[in-house]
Each structure stands twice: as structure tokens, then as C-alpha cells.
Length: 315
Ligand SMILES: Cc1cc2nc3c(=O)[nH]c(=O)nc-3n(C[C@H](O)[C@H](O)[C@H](O)COP(=O)(O)O)c2cc1C
Image (tube, rainbow, N blue to C red; front, side, top):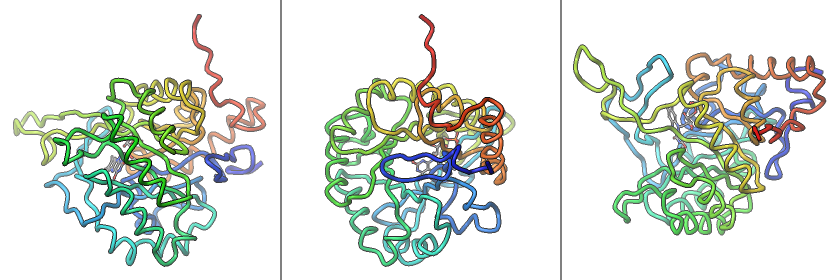
């Protein structure tokens, strides 16, 4: 069986993915930025960069910095805003990477903004081909509630998801931060409000200091930590949530190798995202697909999805 063949195929939230590897939000642009750099046709899916109602310029540079365990970023959800995304970015995904599932990452700063962005994308020319589903980033500050992130407040989670649900029949994934006090509870609230899946996890707050300059390494000061350092955090969140809800999970955080992907699958993920590792080396996701296929072949695993959630917890 060839890499990406039926051994790795996954069905999640009513969508067929040729393999479980999806590019993480914010690390793959809107797809066209990667053409010529990697083959999207080799991957299961792609999550776009954030889309907000209005254009956002984002934070001051530098916006990302590397450290031994990964990367810290404070991009500030910079994006061209709904109107320009509809005109300038969505058409490329409508005409390219046909067999690769396309999820659109949505951000908002008031409860109704997520639904308004989705309504705008649903009405865009080419939506039928360019959009397979949505991922709601609930790590955004709720500016009408003192800046607490939506995901930290069950009532806000329910409201954002219900309003988004009313605008689309396409699958809705809800993306959560790993620092939530009870992530399994928030996941249940999201599912009860109509989410079809969960994405776990977003980055973790951190600070990297440039000791020579005695300054933070990035322009914003603090930022979100991603990459290898957060792998065990994402795997634990996936395990906890997979035991609490029955919907598919996109597990991510720190994935670099096929073995990392297998950790997420054993913990209960249907799909597995790659962000930082793909930014460092755009060929890595494709390599991971081949490695996964080879691992399944050498371990007599006919379908990777058979392994989902089969972690044996010590008694
Ligand atoms: C530069 C950068 C930009 C990101 N932008 C977004 C974003 O727009 N929306 C979002 O939900 N997550 C965003 N993320 C978080 C990633 O999608 C992912 O959850 C996180 O990086 C953990 O995965 P990784 O360790 O494989 O990078 C961003 C991450 C990075 C590094």
C-alpha cells in the first residue's frame, strides 16, 4: 500500500481524509503560500490561518523566536479580514488540493463574531469547493467580558458554538487551550452546543528571554509556546477529552515524527496536526505520512484508526 493509501485513511465528522496529518492553523497560510514548498496533495488536510471579521495587523516584530524545545510566537492573529479572505485567498483553495480537506480557522472578539465570519465565508463564491469545515479558536480574548478567553467560560463557549452552528451545516471543530482548568468539561459544553469535533491543543503561554539584550525574544513580550516542549501536554489533553466526549479529536502540539502521531492516536485522536515542525521543514509532514505507513506495515496494522484510544492506562 502506498503512503497515504487506505491504511491511513480516516473518516471524521463526516469527512474523509486520505491520512490523519493536517497542517495546523497559522502555520500554513491559506494554502497558496505553500504551493511549491510542499505537496498539499500528500496530506489529509489543512487548517487555514485565522480569519476575523476585520483585518488585524497583529503584534510588533519579531513575532516568532525559536528555542531548544520549540518556538514562541505572538502573531496577534494577524490576518486580512473576512472581505479580503473571500476575494483574495478563498478562490485558490477552491481550485487546488481537491482531495485535501480544508478547515477554516475562525477567530472573534465578541460572541457573535465567529458566526458572522462563518456566514460570510458560507456565502463566498467557491465556498462549496474551498470549505470542508471550520475550526473555532476559542483562545481569543472576549473583549466584551474583560478579555477572558472564550474557552475559559462555559457560557461563552456554548453561545459561540450555538451561534456558529446556526450558520453552517459543515462540520465545526472547537479548538481549546491546554491551560483550561477542566478541559474535559469545556469540551463537553462545546459538544452539547453543537460542535462536531475538538482540536487540542493551542499554544501555552510562555516567555523566552534574550539574555544579552535583557529583553523578551519577541516583540510582544510573552507569547504562545509550541513545538516539542508541548507534546506531552497535548497528548494528555487528548486522552482526558477523548474519555469525556464521543466526537473526533484533532490532536496537536509538538508533533515531529510518526511516533509522536502514534502517541496522539493511542490517546484518542482521529487526526493529528503539525505546525512548528512543518514551519521548520515543510517536507516533514509528508515524511511523517510515509513513516506512519511504514510503521503500520511493519506492525501488522491494517488500519491506523484501529489504534485510536487503545492506550493501556496503568492499573
Ligand atoms: C506562528 C504560529 C501561528 C499560529 N496561529 C494560529 C492561529 O491563527 N489560530 C490558531 O487556532 N492557532 C494558531 N497557532 C497554534 C497552532 O495551530 C498549534 O495549535 C500550536 O502551534 C501547537 O502545534 P505545534 O506544536 O505543532 O506547532 C499558531 C502557531 C504558530 C507557531
